[in-house]
Structures are given as structure tokens and as C-alpha cells.
Amino acid sequence: MVSHTPDNSAEIEIPDEISGLRMTRQRQEVYRILQLERNHPTANDVFMRVKDRLPHISLATVYNCLEALVQHGIIRQVNFDRESSRYCPNLNEHGHFHDAATGVIHDVDFKPGINLADVLNLPPGAVIDDIEITLRGKLTTP
Amino acid sequence: MVSHTPDNSAEIEIPDEISGLRMTRQRQEVYRILQLERNHPTANDVFMRVKDRLPHISLATVYNCLEALVQHGIIRQVNFDRESSRYCPNLNEHGHFHDAATGVIHDVDFKPGINLADVLNLPPGAVIDDIEITLRGKLTTP
DNA sequence: ATCAATAATTAGAATAGTTCTTGATATTGG
DNA sequence: CCAATATCAAGAACTATTCTAATTATTGAT
Image (cartoon, rainbow over the protein chains, first blue to last red):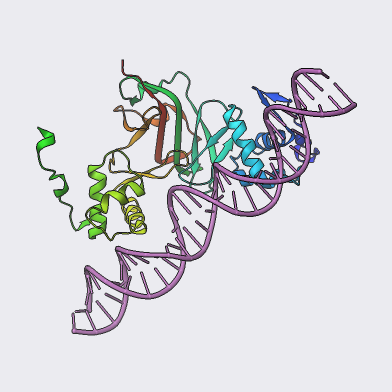
């Protein structure tokens, strides 16, 4: 059924402004790709995908848009080692599991009621602004 | 007192081989810097420091040595965002706290008896090979 | 609506960290 | 001692990203 419905996913509505950021056409399209493409694309992935709708967009603009979106807390930038940055519209605090076999990156949520200070020996007086958890491993499907 | 004692810290003994890796002169010196310089230096930091004892060493060799040491599990490579890689001789499983004010990176140990699966909703069948935890924040000294 | 001021976009050049290439040098095992 | 192998050095090459400068779009005031 689902596979027979025409792809109107492109018709996601994006407002003219999100948390103080003017959503220009380019920013809208970049953001929309991220909403559709949930597999943590790189700037270049987004670039190639967004060209379908904005053939004249430049890679620099994609970088600019992504940075603006990150800056305004609309998306998150995710780094694995020194690979290309990836981008993610999931704003819930979460980590990432990197499946070595497939390269697929899965979001990993925290269990409710977990406090980092319960788990880690933080330096005294440390105030945490940002947490980044990356797991690497294999997904054994038993 | 300490400041008056001559710096014989350079006399750390490093064996000819560590976990199957032949410890050449260059690798020894690179490794020794990491043991002394516990502040997570970059390849370039190591390069500048190691030149005191090996004036002819090249940056490429420092990279080669660091890679060999990482590959053999003798040191760890640590990445923050897309900054230069940093290197760390602490092999205990640990995370890093990045003090935004000073730029200093502190090792953060896990509290004993903590199981990641208790804290995170891992994808079913996930087998973890490697964990990376990076915290960013400020160190308020009360 | 018009126009100036500001912001965004584009294309390509520049940058920085790292890796690669090639030839020289050192080390090991036979 | 010699051949095979590993390591090192110097600089070129590579890649992701940022910067620059010129163009285009948008906004707000008149």
C-alpha cells in the first residue's frame, strides 16, 4: 500500500521562520531533506539531494544553511572521528550507535530518569552544557 | 621543591617492543611525550615537543608513529568535533570533559559497576566494541 | 511602490589537517 | 654478510570545510 502512494513527502510544510531564523528557500529545502533523509547525511549528501529541487544551489550554501540551522538549534551536527560531519534533525538528547558492518548510524535514546552524574566521575564543579555519546559495534540479528 | 629537581622525567624507560609493535627510536620518543604531556596533545604538539630530542623527525613520521601506537592499542586517539585529533595514553575506558573556558580536557572515569545497557536504549542485538563520551561545559570553582 | 540597508547566495580560491608517494635508511632473519 | 622487509623523511596531494568577493534577494522606511 504505502509503496503505491505517490511520494508527497516532499510536501512537508516549513514555516517562514524557525526560532528566529528566517527560513529562506534554500534553508527550507535543506531542512526538508534532513526531515526526510533520517540517515544522518553529510553536507555533500544533502547537496546532491537538494539539487533535485534547487538545481542552482551551491555546496557553500548548503554548508551555510546547515550551519545556520545548527546555530539556531534547529538541527544537530554529529561527528564521527574525523569523518565528514553529519546532520540530524532529532533534537532529543540522544547518542549514536555506529554499526561497523553496514555503516548505518542509529539514534540511541537515554533511558528515562538517568542522570549522567550517577554514571560518571565528573570533575568537581563541572557544569555540563552538551553530551556526546558515540557507540561503535555490530548489530547481531539473532 | 619539585621545581628545583632536574627534569629526569625524560628518563622513562620504554621497552623495545609493546604489544607486538617494534618500538623504534621515533615511536619511543613519541610515546614518551604522551606519557609526560598528559593534556591530550595534537600531532603537531607532539611534533614540536619531540623535536627537542629528535631534531630530524618529520611531522609525517609523528603521524605514522601515532597511528601505529593507536593501531596496536597502546594509546587512544580522541576527536572533538572536527578539531585536530588528540592523543591520550590513558587506556582505561573513560570519557572526556572539555572545559569551554580554558580549553582543557579532563579525563572522566566511569563509576564502577556501570553498564551502558542500564542507561541507554540500545538497538536490539547491538554489541558494543567502543564507547566515546564527550562532555562539554564549564568548570565552576566554587 | 521605491529605494537604501542588510542579509543571503554563489562560485571559486584558500586553508588546515592528514594521508600518500617516493626514495633513502635501518633492521631483521637466514 | 646479504636479501627481504620495515621504517623514515620530505614534500606533494587530498579532502572537508571556510573564506572572499561579487551578485542577488529581502526587508523596512519613506
